[in-house]
Amino acid sequence: MYKIKNFMLLTLIVLSLVFSIANAKSKWWKKILGDKDKTTSSLSNDDIGGAFKQALSIGAENVVSQLGANDGFNADENIHIPLPQNLEKVRKILKRIGMSGMVDDLEVKLNRAAEVATPVAKDLFVQSIKDMTFEDVKKIYQGPDDSATQYFKEKMSASLTEKMNPIVEDSLADVGAVQSLNKVMDKYDNIPFVSSIKPDLTGYVVEKGMDGIFYYLAQQEAEIRKNPLKQTTALLKKVFGR
Image (spheres, rainbow, N blue to C red):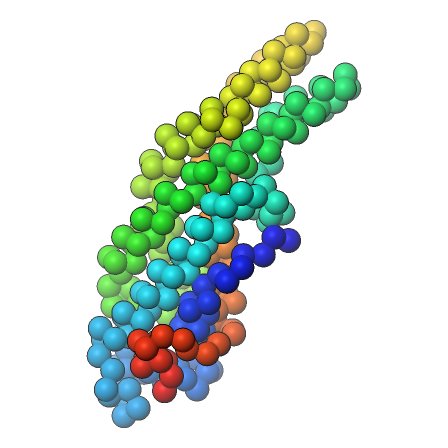
């Protein structure tokens, strides 16, 4: 498993306390929910919301940086992008004539295209976090383990698809995936009695790339609720080091 290094260190600090009702340091959430606890009376909504957004921003940036690196998708068994199902059929047929290596190479290039396109998500995360209201923070706290991930999906999916599409399309050409596909299909189409296949690589890579990004957000969000760590910045210490 290809682990995301340093993923959401500050997010683990913040949201573990945000999401863990049992944790003693979650007292400040009583203020959010209307209980004027004396221990949190010095905290403003701006402090609380700012710390929450700070943690999410740092974490999202780390996710995008990790998945956008070389082998961010390709070497990670959790989010590695396999061939589309219709091309798996092509691989099996070409394997019979010793040409499956061409399809294996294409699979690597699909992952490379996702790695190149992933950084575009950074600005969308930043904007989604900026648009987050105090009511959003409360709903995420009160919701299921993947509430923050679902928030991002709702806010970002349409824009992320739109922005990733042209980048993935260009990337597929740049890394040679389009050329590889053409060579694979030339060999395949010359085999008698096979049915015609027209895979949509761009749409497929965009979909799987987004799945990978949100997969790790959901994984880390669930872990955040269980594992508190020490605070490291002034704002986080002010809000959570109480």
